[in-house]
Image 1 (tube, rainbow, N blue to C red):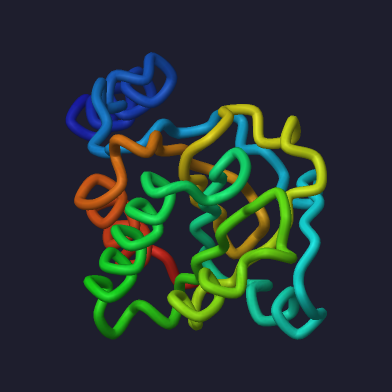
Image 2: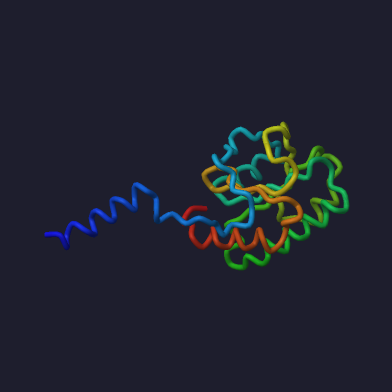
Length: 168
């Protein structure tokens, strides 16, 4: 009788005392808790087809904080390389550059034909400021990266998320 109760009591204590929870995480970016809702962030796209194409996918929002200067162009290049490094999983992730003005961005459209370029209507809705935001297919802004983290840290997190996710 005692042999059958010990595992049950031990499991009960471990569950309610949360003794089994890990004390550290392996993510490189800043996990946004609670996640912000993408529905609150208003974007203006060149055409409606672009907006429909990005729904229900993982998204990397590149918030430049204005027009695209040389450091911004370098970050966009690094994120394009990151996207290529995803290999066969790249189709599950869309890159969206958020700029202030879409009118004078012909060169950007030419250089990055597979990246969606949109205008951020209210920048205050992205509470972390300039950087890269990771949005899940359920429209939750869940992670934030500074521009210093562009490259391997984002790649590591995105690969892990895509491996463990069945959505998007």
